[in-house]
Length: 158
Image 1 (cartoon, rainbow, N blue to C red):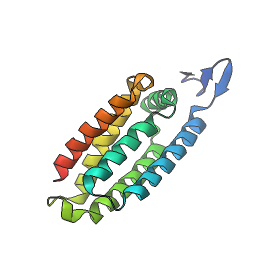
Image 2: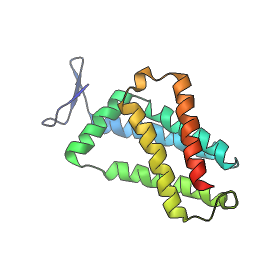
Image 3: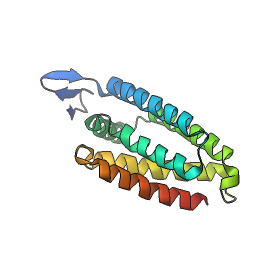
Image 4: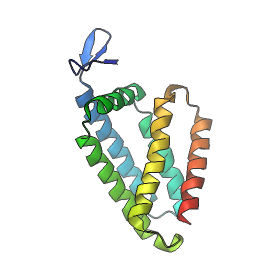
């Protein structure tokens, strides 16, 4: 699929796909997966919950990695961030709610800052994984990335 800034359409196999509507479907699918994961981890200790959330973030970004690349380029070129910002706000709210429920397991930390740092770190790793070869990412590497990211974020929170 190629992005055409002039037409706003992605071209694939002679047909046209609208990245904006495809992007909406992908984001809807991803947010559904993330909501489910947050429900699963609500009662888990921080380290177990983080490992699950990191794994889900990487896996969610692996859903149609070519589309993710097209959307990233589209956002970079057009600056259209409205949908992405809404998605990010929801993720931030879910994570903040979880962190608030686990305050006793964490060092004294500003929850808004901690939420931003945790979400940004996890998102950056998941996003960059997709942009740089998600198709060739082995399950072992996903586990390694999840373990190391979990270690990093849990270390920050404790």
